[in-house]
Amino acid sequence: MTLDILSWICLVLGGLLGIIGGIGVIRFPDFYTRLHAVGTTDTLCAALFLLGLSFQAGLTLASFKLFLIFVFIFFTSPAASHSLANAAILGGLKPVISNSKQLDK
Amino acid sequence: MMYTVAIIAVLITILLALVRALLGPTVYDRIAAMNMLGTKTILLIAAFAFLTGRHDLLDIALVYALINFIGVVAVLKLIEQGNFYTDGETSVDEQHKVNEK
Image 1 (cartoon, rainbow over the protein chains, first blue to last red):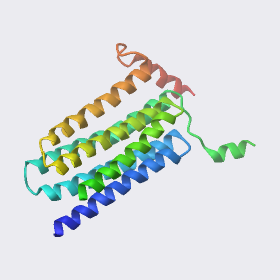
Image 2: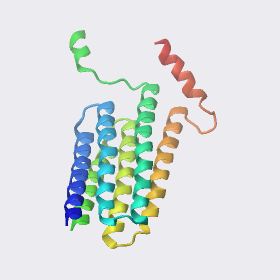
Image 3: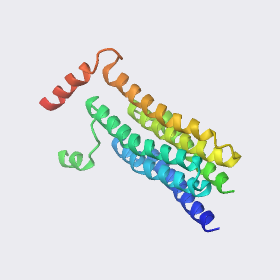
Image 4: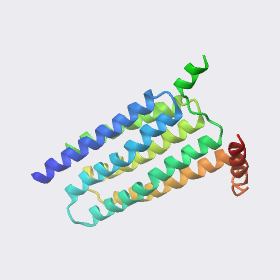
């Protein structure tokens, strides 16, 4: 019962974080802000999701596989975000800075 | 019930990411959206494995986690260099241009 409640909390929080990240991806004005919305919510969303699932699995092979998936996502998601931002900067995409535009006028 | 709610939340997120991948003005927006979609697909497969009770599907999620990262980095390399065979020369030249500015 306690594990069920913990799973509910983790899954609902993870799903909410995912949806918040999706809304951020839709609504933010710039590529870098969108990448920020994705990169920050993605890892924690996956971690909470897999934690909630592994509460249901208990100490079995399934929860070990979930832990492996978490480790891969934990290392690769920030690396992918970093290489995306790096490629965008090298590709000549400038961040939109509203203050400097107002100063120029 | 628990897994159904989780799967619906993930599907909503995938829908939002797909909208950005279709709208995205630059190619980097699309890649970021596809990266997000890949991560959410892993979670979808994991939740589906628990929904149906077939825990073997977790292996597929594990492989998907690896392939997703490799795919994103490969597409970024292709966008950055324009090809797969110059071994990073183009990006180094771009780096010098950025530093000179």
